Image (cartoon, rainbow, N blue to C red):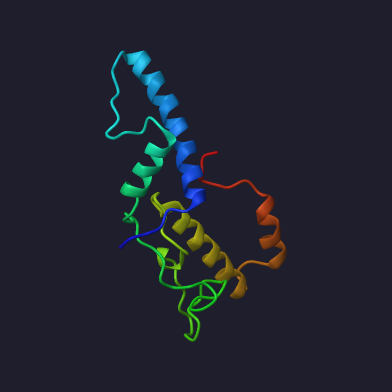
Length: 139
């Protein structure tokens, strides 16, 4: 499979590069080690070339079930009763990062909707949950 690299990916990659560079330089100084990049990333163009070359295959596949065409906004499979999709298949395109937390958020949203639909969560409680701190997730 081959995926495109969009301008927003390039911007995000450059930000990530700057952050990683700062951390690596700090570690190199602290531990007196030499860090050698695996490729030519000394210039912006070199970094973009690396991104395009290395990010051509998705390590975490996704996509395939278009939101609005095959899946509704509540993650239900259109045309099927009681079939919900909590999978990276609903992502518009794969990312370069592990999708576990995004999938957990999708599952949480889906369960919230189901609980509300089944009457297990009063609407007023559901509306007030947005103002409550997230439980179990470090901030």
